[in-house]
Image (tube, rainbow, N blue to C red; front, side, top):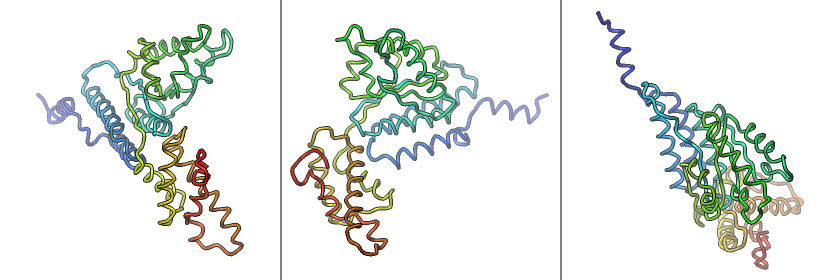
Length: 304
């Protein structure tokens, strides 16, 4: 005769409460960090949430004995430099680790030079070493399109692609590969390698930041280091960004970080030359002089 305990067991097998799942809590913490630490990127954050939701539901299905194939998790991140691709890869690794899809939240970043050898027989060991270092985590291949150089028939990049194709299929349970780079070049890269494209179901586009978003990023960077812009300095930095965004090699948040670092250098020089005791306010305040000392204001040269 069925007992109350039997009924409870039967109920347990029929439902899975995601709200009480510790893995879901960890995923939500990572998503909250993604939201709070990265300015803008609304469409990127939406795609990450969708992937997280897919994996949470897949976990619930597994708990209830509903068999299905493991989701393919290889991804492509496209966008300009300094748009948060590496940071999002790190957040994604944490989500995958929380849900048991990778053994470690580590991201191993490589470029062509880390994978392609200079002579026959050199490429395979280099590529397999990189894959071994990323095993159990995420392999992030930056500027992945440089692996494909059709104009050079003796190039060894194609050998890397062939090894990746094999490992991405054979090691799906222990390796996630993220390809990253400029959108137009990545489109060409995948078009020329349809076997690779078919193994990458998640394509996420990272847009350049707007001026207002870059100012918010600057404010966050300055505050994180226990500095602050005074009002005139903040207005000057806004002017600086207007100019810098029109210059070659602008790299979004990366260029903002470099500019803030140079403001700090100019502040330090200014303070040392005061030859007087320094107050706390002196040490934390970036002034208009610290910003407008950039060569960009003097002669329109590349950012200084």
